[in-house]
Image (cartoon, rainbow, N blue to C red; front, side):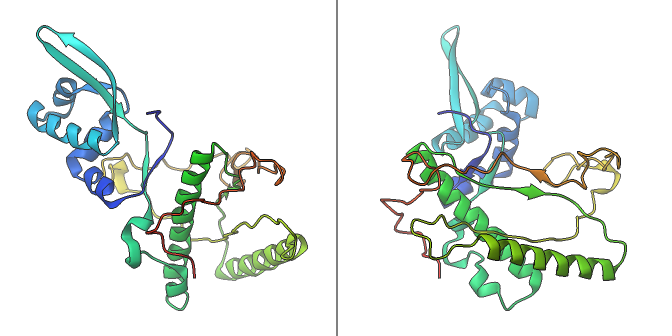
Length: 258
């Protein structure tokens, strides 16, 4: 198994195996390879207890063997987490997962959450299909922060952004193009949550986010959109084109989009 930058957990059994509080601590500690004995010293837990949780994590594919060492008459297994970070695919919730079609007429924040949830679900599937085909997904990400001087300025921004996006989409959309490449575009905004007071770690043990110390004169500060890798514009006729993520063997349990 190769360690990836992000592992998407796509089934309920694996998610349940991972979400035990002790196992989350183990996964965080196993960013660097270690043995059950080493983890026991670091986490202050009995070795036998950690050994049990390690076996469960390894069976679920969340921990991998790095090496085995001889210690006298015993063999010490050194393992590491399968990834530095994890995301649970919302599809594991099945029919009760958030869906934009069901949230469209609810609260605006519920609709935004449902749209973002659909994005995670669809990207998880596309990532899996692209991995099977040995292809790279063509994705584009813009991430930035903006501060409004007043509610009126916020309203003007929303109107101008909506108009600009509509114009760009209308200019480039070619719905009748043969072999056209369909993409989903999502634009959303929400207030930035307050940081944990006093720099205390969050409930999951992670350190609180650092204060924003960006320099207003620095073009790389938070007010400048941060963009992902270049948008892949490979030729659709190229058999290695990553936009072709059709699944010749679709999962039977995946619900079709309405």
